[in-house]
Amino acid sequence: MIDNFSNLFDNYLKLTDSEIEFCRPYFELHSAPKNTLIEEENRVPRHLYFITKGFMRLFYYDSNGDEVTTLIVSPNRFVTSFTNFIHEQKSNENLECITNCEFYKIERSKLVELIDKSESFKKLSLSIFEQSVATTQIRVNDFATLTAELRYKKLVEQQPELIQNVPIQYIASYLGIKPQSLSRIRKQMIK
Picture (cartoon, rainbow, N blue to C red):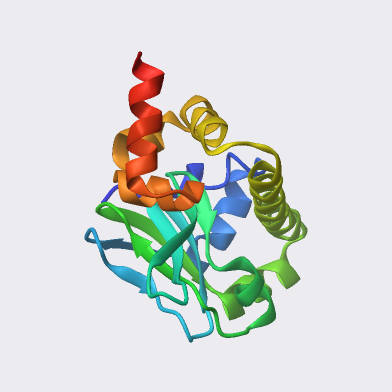
């Protein structure tokens, strides 16, 4: 595992070297193999994760027992079941490694402590949670206004790394369609 902690927050906020060293002890570096459940449904999410390598997804089981993917996260992003994490409520979602993953994690209590001690980390946390809200809002708007084909095209344009690294069944679920429908869309795009 590579310790690239100094680059951890660059997509969110530039921290000084001393701020990075101050918060380093609060984070733990871990790895997990493909298909590992990192957080399970019916439990309160206790950690915020930052993926340094690999891909993760949030998903739940619908009333038919089918998996519904609500978020696919690529490297250099934070992930958790944000609303449940913030409010310390049981989540109906599972967090799973789609590929072999390396990630940092921080316990909620340590995150709160960091926020209390550091104005920069308060800003950073706000940025992380704002991005989560924005991502959710964009997803809701896309489902309301775009066809499945247009949602797929947008995903290909904005996050091509997902198409290359994530199994089609998870992408289809994330787009709200069946894998067979996604296969048809992909074939039509090639023509």
